[in-house]
Length: 106
Image (cartoon, rainbow, N blue to C red; front, side, top):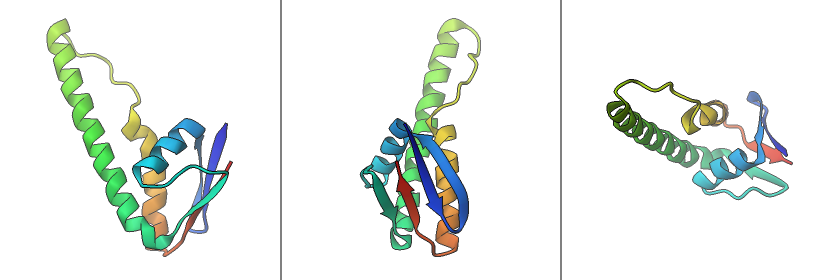
């Protein structure tokens, strides 16, 4: 199932329900049939999501270093959490710049 995030400040962001649920959980929200991230909540939501992305990148880099040294070569990098989170983070940032809310619905 898909979740569509909408804001008057940005194009829509559409993602799978599992990813939407995870991202919303990171910023302290719960995925319901409909919801809102109020513009007053955006600075904290952005801070939390940025911290999660940094943590994910550090974990992925440590894992790649560990597996590459064991295998004797560099592994191909796959699309991780941080790449999937960037469109949502961009939406949060742009909505904050325009003092706009973000709405979602299933």
